[in-house]
Length: 146
Image 1 (cartoon, rainbow, N blue to C red):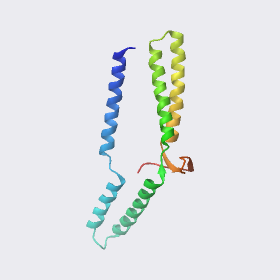
Image 2: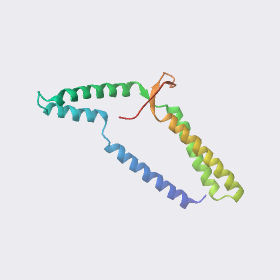
Image 3: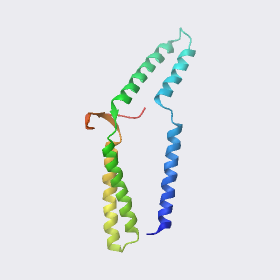
């Protein structure tokens, strides 16, 4: 096993992970957006036309946030399976790196197959959807993160 290549891969993964965490930390939540909108609503004059529209928008945002928090969920078992398949893809690619030509072709083909399979599984299970108690999808309704 070549530890210098593994170390470089590990540093790259940690760098991407740190960047993702930084973006998540700076992102505003739906509740923060509603609080900001409520602050704007308080500062608007009582006779403003925008006041009524903003109040309706805030009501819709709160209702959507409540629905999003209580009804829409991801499929955790599907996410775990997709992640395991993607790790298997990385492992097959890594072990194929130092193998003979025939084994390299086989392992990289297998890694490409696992990458496609894991990516498709991740794309299917990552969006939040309405689910029953077992985690099965109830409706074909996909809602992006607000």
